[in-house]
Length: 257
Ligand SMILES: Nc1ncnc2c1ncn2[C@@H]1O[C@H](COP(=O)(O)OP(=O)(O)O)[C@@H](O)[C@H]1O
Ligand SMILES: CC(C)(COP(=O)(O)O)[C@@H](O)C(=O)NCCC(=O)O
Ligand SMILES: [K+]
Image (cartoon, rainbow, N blue to C red; front, side, top):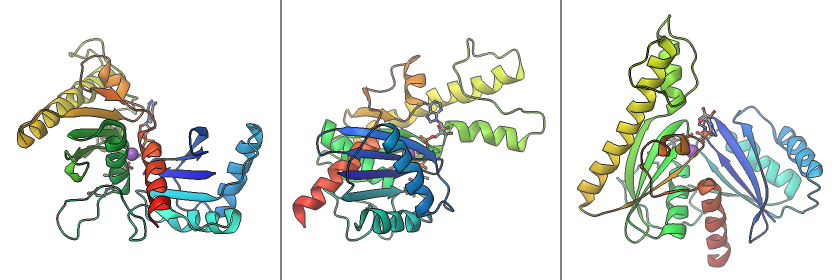
């Protein structure tokens, strides 16, 4: 049984994959101080609650936060007696090429999204991931990662307004009824919501123009449906994209080592 761990700057998702389907998945906040023992207590409690009596034999990790990998490695070693595959490390093979400037450290989540996109949709893709940052990963015809775009995340943008301006409150994103806001919250939501619609549309159009071809736009992340509901920005939405990519990379490494 495989434990796939997708660690973002805000949240970490743990999912159990039996080779054909996910048996369960759970989300916790990302905290680098959390120890292997803490992870295990949390995980084993949830597994018991769901009456999941399975043996974890393999583990794969993608982490945009380098510091958390240490304790996740200890978890793998101490509780599952396995050595985890860590995306981005030299011993973790990728089924796609990475064509970027020499010396560039591409975020592992972006590599995993590329692999997942290629597995599910083929090539000539733009993968849009609404995480802490909103990333656009460009997938070549042959599935290679060839670069992309990093923008401030939706909640990060709202939080930055709140942090920097004394009179602006903490606000959650939602679709405003009108563009012209008639109160502070509506004005902030309008700026970020409609600004984001424009950002996604413009970046995708420019990527397609730069590549001189039509490309499919695949979105992932909890906020993608919110943006899709008002404008047709994406050709497809894939909820568990990153975690799916981890299972593909794990299988590729099993088959090729
Ligand atoms: N379904 C959702 N509805 C609203 N906000 C969400 C949803 N899913 C995630 N978020 C928010 O989006 C931001 C990014 O979350 P997440 O995708 O977990 O980021 P990361 O992968 O970078 O850890 C966070 O602020 C989180 O609270
Ligand atoms: C851009 C990111 C911060 C996105 O992380 P996330 O929003 O998933 O937490 C992450 O992919 C990262 O740290 N990238 C390293 C730089 C790069 O990808 O070029
Ligand atoms: K992410």
